[in-house]
Image (cartoon, rainbow, N blue to C red; front, side, top):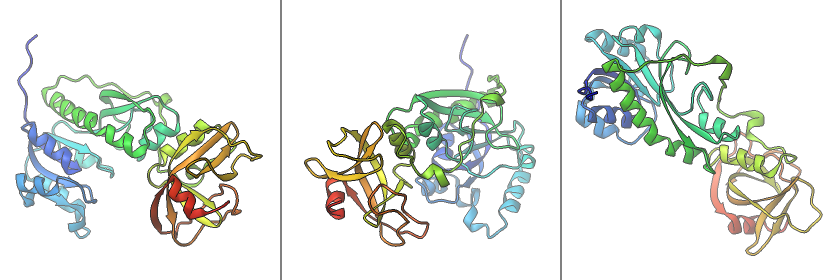
Length: 324
């Protein structure tokens, strides 16, 4: 069967500039681009390509954001609304104004890890595979019919590394799904709600570890929180955040799970676990408002009022703490 000729659509875009630039590069027209309210690469280039008048920035709308978007949607027909790393819900009334509805790309294999932090969700759950899902947008977050998916091994990546590794597959899914919807060549299928999980931003107990967990479980939580916000701990009344850690042999000392020692050559901070030990490879000091801990074990630290200080790697962090 011969390949179909590419179809170029008139799109409304929501999200980060890189997604909008990718769609422009595929030959689509952007009637408008609503940019996520965070500084990001590509904003100036996007404005240069489509003009400031077609870029809607939430911070500049002075409370009239919804009215501004409504006006753009009513100006002229739109084929499709496309979302890429847009964190707000797009109202059904807006979706209904586009001839073909709306699509987005979520960085997980839906229905697993719906929600705002699928990177934490996939790593912390111990998934061996994650990926991206292009799906139809509906009234509820991440519940629309699946258009296409691609997978990627999680490996030993932390949350930031996993997010970056998914950027290219996500953009590829964005391009493919947009074209296929415009061509009418995709068969969407419903998500199985029995397989659905939710991936919120980590809070409370999700920001901590239980030192009675196996070493691999502790390291998975650290990777899921890394490099930011990091795992909050306290030693010697010094609150800090663990950005990176690794498994090491347990020191030949009488240590309880959760107890810390300066150990090895070069000297580094090692914390005992029930089946081994971990080495703190990179930590950021908290410079005020230290959290409560017992000052000896790897207790919880890092109150909400803490300010982030200097990043210290293993030996430098051990020198900063001194003898334990």
